Image (tube, rainbow, N blue to C red; front, side, top):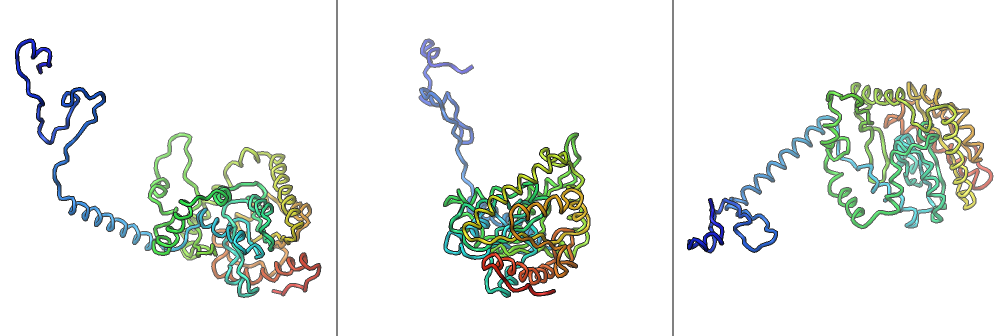
Length: 394
């Protein structure tokens, strides 16, 4: 048994001033008498740290290269991320002197199906793309209505299941724009210029935690299979977007995308829309919010036109059943007093290929934009000047 200092003094035993432990043994409280809260110390033995660092770096580069090659083989290519920072960057253009331009808002159909280069080729103007996938455009409509810098023209895409439910998967993008700090701006700049143009794996759908989560794990009671929407898009620096080519050419991946939509169709409605009466109340609320925002924009001289892009297959059948046109689209145009362009009303807006029932192929998106732009321009000019020439035919 070790002797304490008092016992040693009583027995006349001399103790060393400090017990020297071997270098590989950490110090304990008894090695530091008088220290109230000793912190453990561990001597680090000498190591070839330079070679260790180089080995770790080589392993990191090897693993990252394997991950990159795996996703490139899967069909991914480098491209810009559809982040909140990217949306805020485009939104700030309105405050930086471009408030008089045409602005596009809506959900993923407006984002995928309207091609900015085609619009620019026809009109000489490249619109600002502010559509957000999986998100009702009503909050963005209200945000633009309160911004006096916006004096241009507004095209609003309408996806019935999103617009009339108020669902906002990307609703935080608006808050991000208003409260984006210097670190967030610099982080977006670094991501956009140093990572996104060069790495195919740098996509949220390819993140390792996401990949692990969607594996076929055994489900515990009460758990559901992960049915989050997979990667569907590729995007340019100014958010010009098209459907990912893999959705077009890979039958297995296209079937996966369709099965995910089907899971959503079959799933329970949100609690605020689980009865027909609740659904009508929510739709009415969204229409009233839109009407108020459109009235504010019109007082500022901003013309507004609504556009219902195509859908087909099971997605179109779901929309027809859950949100029929007479209960949604018609009241929207009536309450807002704004013109609307519904794909069912124009032969030139029909007959396109939608691989997963909701978005056009890249080639058809260009053709659709070319057919849509004259119709939109006609309606916008009619509001701005009172009269307008008839739109071009198909």
